[in-house]
Length: 116
Image 1: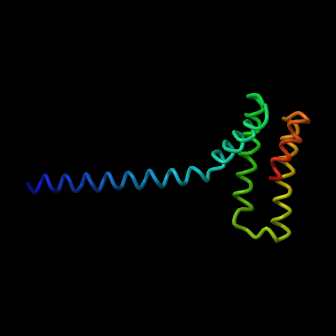
Image 2 (image 1 turned 90 degrees about the vertical axis):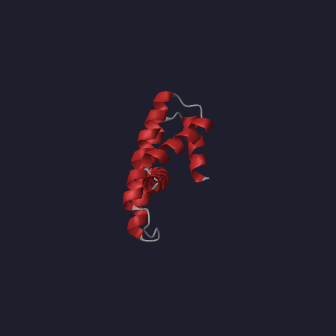
Image 3 (image 1 turned 90 degrees about the horizontal axis):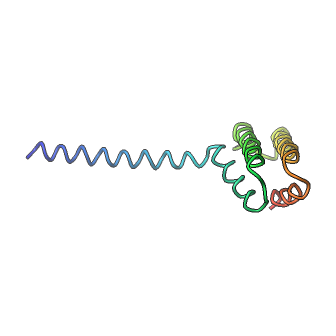
């Protein structure tokens, strides 16, 4: 009888531990640059008529942008000149790359989405 109680207690602890670990990994995944980039590209795809190669290119650009942003800007004071300059540089780089990928009409619509 004691063995059954011990086994049930251990099983309960293990199940609770697995659920806690799974919940942590899900919350961490939403902060990853790839996940953020995928969401943004999906939103752009829904509003603009872009093809697969454009989606892949935008995903690469947004992933790069999000990684740079998270590494160098996130959590810092945006009023500091150095941080503001880096943010502008990263955004200008993103705009340049997106302009190469989209046609003029798509790019204008994308700029409007960016300001929202």
